[in-house]
View 1: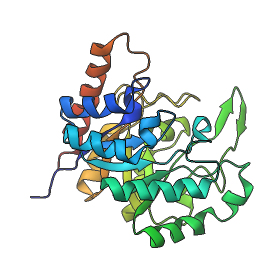
View 2 (view 1 turned 90 degrees about the vertical axis):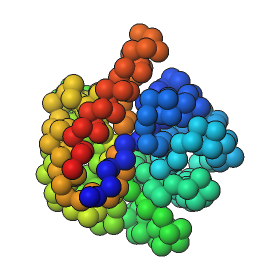
View 3 (view 1 turned 45 degrees about the vertical axis):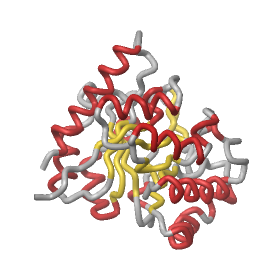
Length: 261
C-alpha cells in the first residue's frame, strides 16, 4: 500500500493569529505538518524560533513559503534573490524539502528577466525544491492587468517544480485538474483551498466554492503524487476561535477524504 498523502497547515491559515498559533492549531487539530509563511510576524522569519516551535509541538516543517507578497517586500531585505537564498537556509535548518515562491512582479524587471534560469540555478546550488506557484491576472471591473513576469501561469514556463494553488486557479478562471495533468511529475506541491471565480483571491474552505477540489485531490492521489498537500485558507472572517477551528478541521477532513488512494 502506498503511504497516504500528508495534509499540512499553512501558518497563513490562522491569520491574524501568529505563526506560533499556527503550529499549536496544526498539532492540536491533527495535521501532519506545517508550512511556514514567512511574513511580517517576526517569529516567521526567525530560524531558531521556528525550530523551537517545531520541536515543542512535534510538528515537522514541510515547506517554507518565501516572502513574496507586497506586504513582505522588506522581510529579509529588499533583494529578491537574497530572500530565496535565505528561504533555502531556513528550509535546510528546519528539515523542510520545499520552498514555495511566487513569480516576480512585472516591475521587478531585473529579477524577472533571469527568473526561470535563476530558479534552476538555486535548486542546483541548494539541493532543494523551489516550487513556483501559479498566480492570476489582476482584475478590476472589466480591466485586467498582468502583474507577474514572465507570467502568472507556471505551467507554460520551464520550471522543474510547480506549486498549484486552487484559490489562485479559481481567480484565474483555470482548471486545476487540467493543469495537474499537463504538469505531470512537475507538480511538486499543492495549496488546497477553493474559490467562487471572484476577482479576489478568496482561499475558501475546499468544497465551499466552484473549484473541482474533490476531483483534483482524487487525481493527484491516483496519479501517484509524492508531494505535500497544504491547507491554505482564509479564516479572517471567523467570528471566534471556535469557528476558525471548525473551518480548519473541515478543510483537513475534506483533504484527507478525497486524497485517500
